[in-house]
Length: 37
Image (cartoon, rainbow, N blue to C red; front, side, top):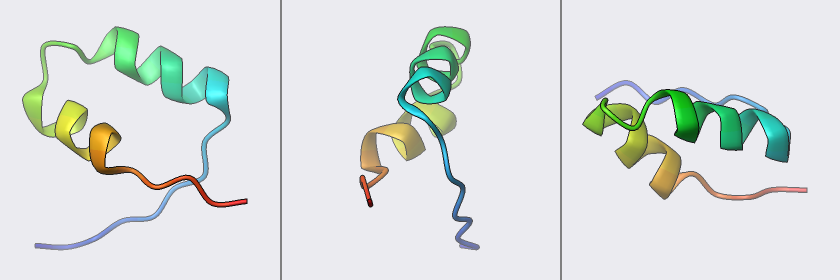
């Protein structure tokens, strides 16, 4: 599987979670996302 790295603000992350609750693969990716400073 190809890996992608994106940078999101907390607001972006929350918006993605709100918008994609019906998309299991995106939700899985968001859950596995690691926070880096």
